[in-house]
Length: 113
Length: 111
Image (tube, rainbow over all chains, first blue to last red; front, side):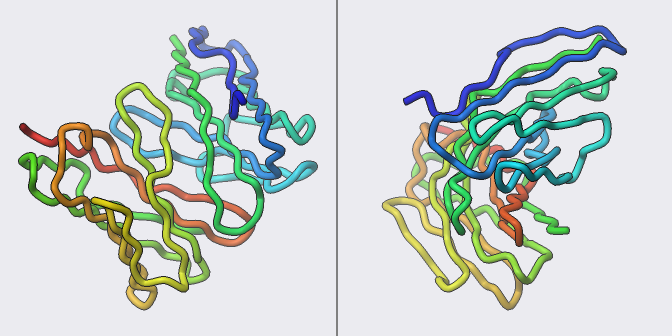
């Protein structure tokens, strides 16, 4: 049982390049999330998808887009990367029922130079 | 939207002492308050949670308390051990499955 899988684990981009972070879960969860974690800071919500077919902005959505491809997959796209987007990105999923645990992927360490 | 504040940002304790981390939230409709532990280089993992109809919950050396009137909740770790050294995050769930985290507390347990 893989849980939540993110790819890639590490990535270096040049300013202005684009890329997509992939996330897949095999727990049949309805809700999926993208967070970023900057050094010494907490987890800030970028976008989330409460259920398949819906997406909503979180605290820091600017510069990002998301796609809930199907129930399993939720991708995060950076159209034109900036150094301020250097961070560790975590994908998470939850069953979608009230008051349930969030399961996190292993994270993607992104550096924009 | 929901805003979660967490204090302190760093906490150093002697092994065997207790550690307390406090969080406040802004959305009175929030009804679920989990705590996550993140070891260095690892993903966050749930250690304990509490729902709004409960005032206190305990699991071995960790306990959480919730004061809905004051909109704050706390994590208590007793008899701290070196393996308790990590970053701890509180979170609150508001409407629509949105889970908002606090800024984290780095706990260092000194042997």
